[in-house]
Length: 113
Image 1 (cartoon, one colour):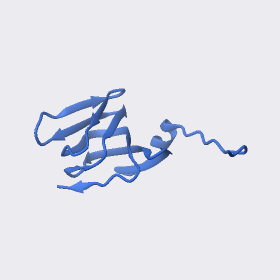
Image 2 (tube, helix red, strand yellow):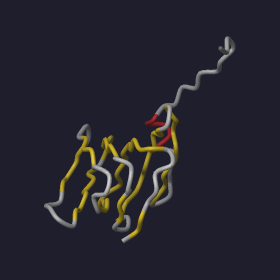
Image 3 (tube, rainbow, N blue to C red):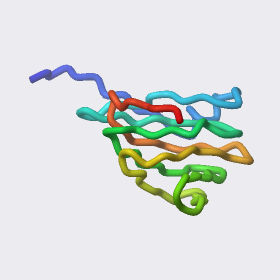
Image 4 (cartoon, helix red, strand yellow):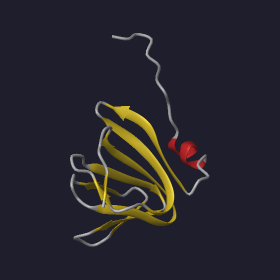
């Protein structure tokens, strides 16, 4: 067991505020076999799915749309969350600058449709 372990404090507002690109996705932390990603973007991501990994989205600011091939689009605003089960084809998009967190397996495969 480590006794001199370093603990890192990450301020999500500062991190997202430093992003100037139209799209940026960064790993904030890893926990066991999963990671927490912060995404800042405007626009849309490609249609895709993750064969063996669920995804949990939490919106911090803006509005995130998640389109599905076989069901209605979901709109998430600040403090809304949704879990996308493994194997479900979807895409994320936004019309305004949107910041969201995503929890997923660190080694999750992404299959572009």
